[in-house]
Amino acid sequence: MSHDPGTAMMAEASTPADSAMDETAIAGAPGAGRRRLLVYAARVATLVLVIGGWQLLTSWKVIDPFFFGQPSGIALKLRDWLQHGTAYGSVWLQIWITMREALLGFVFGVAGGVVFGILLGQVRFLSDVLGPYIKAMNALPRIVLGSIFVVWLGLGSSSKVMLAAVLVFFVVFFNAFQGVREVNPNFIANARVLGASRMQVVRNVVFPSALTWIIASLHVAFGFSIIGAIVGEFLGAQKGLGLVIATAQNNFDPDGVFAAMLIIAILALTAEWLISRLEHRLLSWRPPAPTEIAAI
Image (cartoon, rainbow, N blue to C red):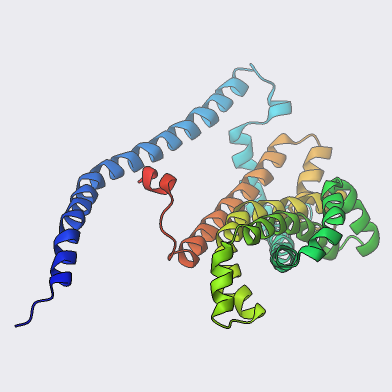
């Protein structure tokens, strides 16, 4: 039987490293499990401490529940909304309207941010021409843009979707733009030497390289889309969680404000989990970062 010296050398060289990695993974697994349990326990303890302290301080009148609300009052408010609805209809309807506006704004903002980020990142002339205008638009207060959109588009969902899309656009755009600028120029040069067209370079080299930056921006972008929808509903709406919060504020009902905020927080955390799953799937080819290895 023939024997390949190169193969034998590779096998001999790789075996100790593989064994060491396996031993490290086996030894580190229990520690990782203990750390995960410790993190979960600390999270639960923090939540119990904050909510329990809040309830006790308001019950003892150390802080005024009229202004600060109570966890028990928030729970009662949520139960009332679930059983009898809000002043504007079912609480599920308010959640759906706000989430629909946020999701549409998120989709439009991400699409626009990715397209313009890659385009301006690739074409320096466009970047030099449009860059100052984009920075000026980004510097405008969002509340002013929301008011303009309400005047233009009315009290319906369109003005909220537009405001959410604008907030998302700038977050994704700057990340996509920077991600394109960070692409290794050697990769682009090699692709062009191999005969790739400009579109092929963008599709097969530039976009995958910038994908890490783009995905990272989505974690922040979805939160901004919810903010855009809520702020738009604050400025003028017929339904939605923002209108529910505004009504509770006008009625000096902190329990109602906190109850709506709790719903929004649950929605945002759910979306964050989904985006994290998407990130793991799309970036499964990427080697783990040093911070990710340290967290195991």
